[in-house]
Length: 467
Image 1 (cartoon, rainbow, N blue to C red):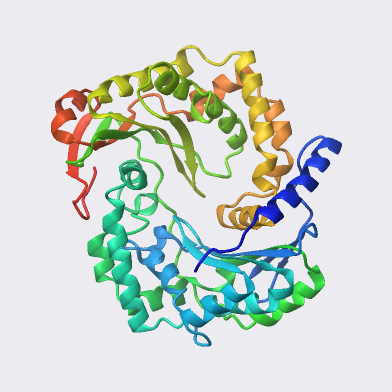
Image 2 (cartoon, rainbow, N blue to C red):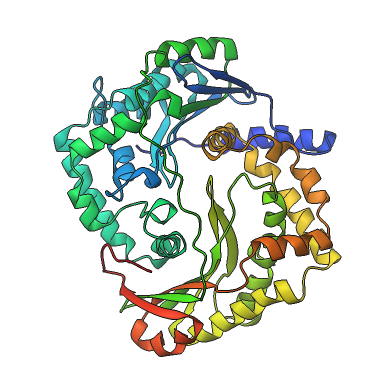
């Protein structure tokens, strides 16, 4: 769908309201909300925010790439196909109706869950909520529209190979987790998508899109009592059905050596690389402390990595590190890119900088700066009702609750240099690091072989095994 709604007014108004509340309170607290579970198992979150006459909705279904089985990309293409019309309205009719009222609606699928997201004027809630209901419960799944969509999807997959930054994470996940679970190719590959037909999409939707596997979060300008009545009328008829068994994804592999996956892109002028290993689950009790420490290493412009590789050495336009967390696992990776002929220099400097974390540790002055930074960055992440419905949906899908929000400042304040050392030793991978590089293999192969056991693939390869 076209995302045409201008959110400037909403963001400004809500930000102003929240800023005044931060002055008056000791720390940010998640606004009050109501949580209801319908008889069919659907979870409903209602959070009234009356600053702007807008409503935001996030309908989350616990179906993602980890549920693709032997058909990589099935969830992703199913989510996209749901936008191709409903039994009540065609794709064009839905788009025209939403454009006319200035509403925004789109679908998205990731590793563990999928979303139907909408933003609209409060006066249009009946119309837009009806469209959401139809997209989720009664998608049209027209063969002709699906064929055209699938063709476009395949073109986009090929185009992704021209953007190493868009695909390197998938290579890294596959290396860390293996072929299944979090190692699944979220978007699929050319061969797997070609093999998926409309019957597969219908079966996937029928299996996973069930109310006990879903939640709908609504935030904005509405009356909770009236909204609950409306949602019950729309979704109470959604039948439970029998969910397939939900397999727990494999944890990160226990590596006994460093490995290097070299992805050849023969026309590349630079090398993009990730260095790291296993990470943490989103609900980890130390998630906040880990974030503070990572801010120092590679989580802000003045981080050690960016300062060393960009500011001082001029090897890149940006270097960073991050923990990517899922419901039951995750990854840690240092990330940057550099000219082909400075690949080894950049990798060596990244490793040297990372080594400081273990050998030098973090002093109180540096820690105090990072703590002030993350506390300043935290509230703006939850300024608008759009941010809040995304948060509520993620809480449902990833298994954490508002304690992360409500105790955030206390957790940051309680972090000491001594505890930071414990966090580093426990969660930041130190030995047997894993490397993924995308670049001109012919020019860097012999130079980078020193980093680990080398395996080479071409970016044009399909369905390869990285291990």
